[in-house]
Length: 330
Figure (cartoon, rainbow, N blue to C red):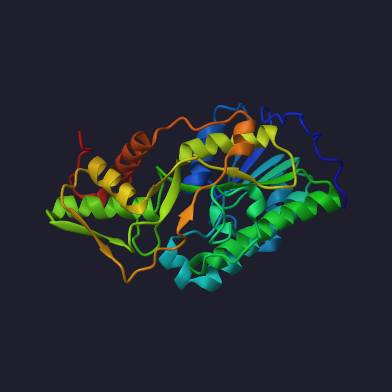
């Protein structure tokens, strides 16, 4: 079944009046996309996990045939931090491969007009030149602690390119930097760095601890983007971008983990000492993505980092009823 020609380059894709499926709408990015798409005068289509298992091909095909979305955002994925990636290697590779392959293939079979696959900055080589451009993909070895997830996401990019080339599908990919904000995961065994630090700092404050400990040396540098800025960028990309190569979604600035920890402690109001556990891994030394392609489309972030961290801590206090008493630092 061959699809018609892709949207002409430079022709904006209109979301207004379209049925738009956000796959993974209960996740942090998916929920932010639903919030952002509410301003687009489109019909947002979602599917709860209880009603649709994205790892089952027949189920995805049947659901897609029934609901016939015209545009798709693939925000569904099995995600986690360094510990989770390094511990559950099979699940991170297998489940993410199934989710993306099932949705992309069903989108082609059901004539979806446009699809955006959401990846991750971990697709890039561990020692990529900074800032990382899209062309750095597959130019060197991956970071070993998350290579399983990275390989799955690279496969998703290549699937979109293959369906685009062979069938003329307007399928694109976007690779966001490290995200944070409402709807995050605060489980220390599986969370990313900002929610983990927020929880650690909050609990240290509530318990009256003299110190809190971070993993590694604190020297690696990371870039962070608020999830609502990410959602805004993804909608912008869906409308204006149509090309085989993936596109980075980033802030353009980075901080060391130690600097980040100090900012989080300031927002949370923890005044104790910060110590480091050097027996734990640092991960990639630095990961700053080039945003030139996205900036050329006329998009830039709106939420300042300190403002975003305050919003993330407010969300933590709201979303975790077991967090105890806590107030934002003045």
